[in-house]
Length: 82
Image (cartoon, rainbow, N blue to C red; front, side, top):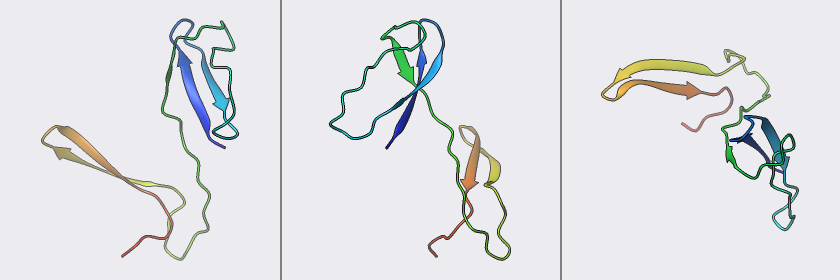
């Protein structure tokens, strides 16, 4: 069940649309002003994982300088392939 997040381009309201399955028809308009002019925004994510010995509770961010400016690598806690 994906939840999509949008920002209305008319009133700047941020809202979510839940789509239960691919066959569902969902009313795609702003619940605040009923505009159909909106854009999808990047939603934040949440995670909950068991902690192993020596693992941190949250993501680790490593920043460095790159040719295009600054770059970051985000490492999420949990099992990784070696």
